[in-house]
Length: 178
Image 1 (tube, rainbow, N blue to C red):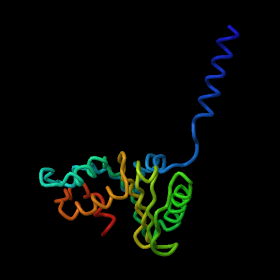
Image 2 (cartoon, one colour):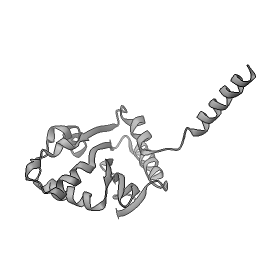
Image 3 (cartoon, helix red, strand yellow):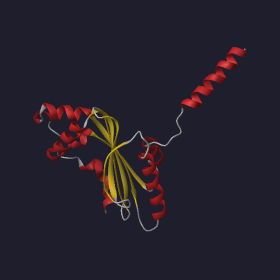
Image 4 (cartoon, helix red, strand yellow):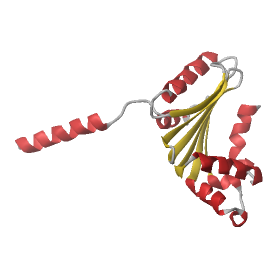
């Protein structure tokens, strides 16, 4: 009896210790997906609408490393500026975690964008683009994949020029751009 109580207590303790309560982008996305102030989208690689037979081996390899994109956007207006500032500060705080390695930043503190990633130079699991503008709001884009690297990302960007993007998947974002 004492052993099973001890074992149960130990199991509960290990479970509590192993649960991370630190903020992450994934948790932030989950918490705000159904929030009326946010627009949330999951976009698959099929959005590119490419004829894979016409792609080079390098282009096909780059596309295989790309799984999907998660997009979360907050539309700012005159009535929600305080909430915009709070939510933007939350995302910036999450991105300061050492898990997210910053590649570059563009613009000033109030308006601008940053690109970060999770993983190593040769095995990037996630690229994160965070763009914000006080008048419009902000968007966080998570590009998820396996074994992505900077060359793959550049190749995918070049392939985008040739793609016939399925705009139907991006329809909810049109509201943010209006």
